[in-house]
Picture 1 (cartoon, rainbow, N blue to C red):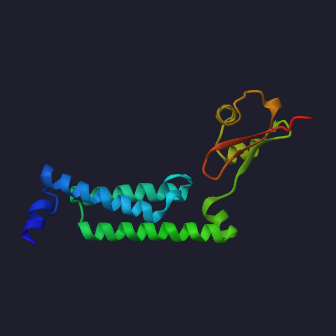
Picture 2 (picture 1 turned 135 degrees about the vertical axis):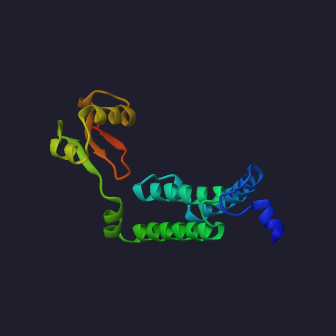
Picture 3 (picture 1 turned 120 degrees about the vertical axis):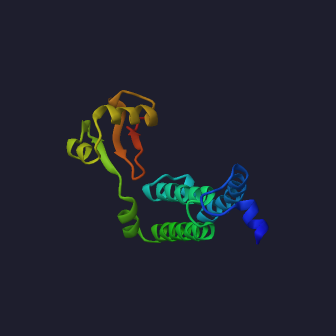
Length: 165
């Protein structure tokens, strides 16, 4: 037990080697937690997915610097990942729960008009919407655009008008 304390230290009085050793262990634990949480947690980027990124980072950093006890920090991370996985499973299997947790897309432009009340609801200006249009549709010409939405993950997406054949 004394060798473990020598290698990893205890409390907040850690030297660089002890913090480095903790960092190595936390790296592999984080890798395991990310694999357990699934690809979605670092790919989809909904508010739910951002929560796991922020909370795991905060809790695991405490384990590295010794701000709190190591084992309880790791247990907390396992609970966070399990909760995330449960919520994701519930979202996949229940549309009502999905809308409650993730929200729904908000229309911002339709029938050649910007939708002011929904722009205000989404807290977006016309220029921010145009940035999203340029990025997603690769055009500034709104005559080419049928609809624009802000998606539940905060991205702006555009649907081009169908070309007449």
